[in-house]
Length: 304
Image (tube, rainbow, N blue to C red; front, side, top):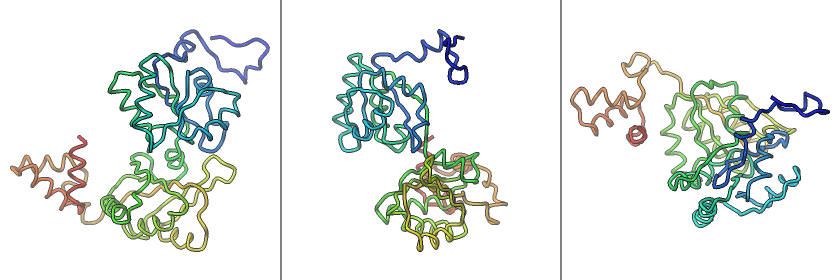
């Protein structure tokens, strides 16, 4: 390991030749670079290095990324890459990578490809054998989960719910018996409607942590029930982007003694198939046992 002479040890990171080789920016590689969700100090030294050395940067909003780069005195060519141009721009980026250029993909805040069109670019690169690597960093949902005070051992990320009222309520009904802690993103202007739908689907007594302005000076985490949250925001105007961390469903008296209470869905379905049922009938029976839509069970089976 080596240190720079004349520099305080507390300001240095020990390096060796293997570290430097591993951190070298390689041509023809897509780098997923996590950016701060509020506090600029959260941009890692490795992220700064990669942003400063790649051939170009693909950004969700080049104006926002330009401000971030300016704070670290980085000047790089940029191209926009976002939901409405991801197909055509993805092809352009993939072609440049195939020609040997290196690219850093960034979002306005957080980790690319999480509830983000970056997942399409990663899939395209994977399909074409283009190397992809991640420069880890901030993730709003995980930050909120750690602050929530709710169980963290098992959780599921739901991102933004549909803006279509019927689709949103259908999805929440599917999640009504979800045992894992659930993570949702929500914009301030839609928070009241979402909280009302959550309370209607899960019950007013379900616990929730409402996390806003994470890592910023005005960071706030409110821990209450969904019913209390609905009442609170009837009087208070929501501000900032929210991560909602919702407690999973608890075992009911009806399921405590059920033979399938500790089974996951595929095991539950497999049990009935072993009893001689067709796969379709087994899915219907498992859905009826659990009190969930048949499509929920089917989707879980397809994912396996």
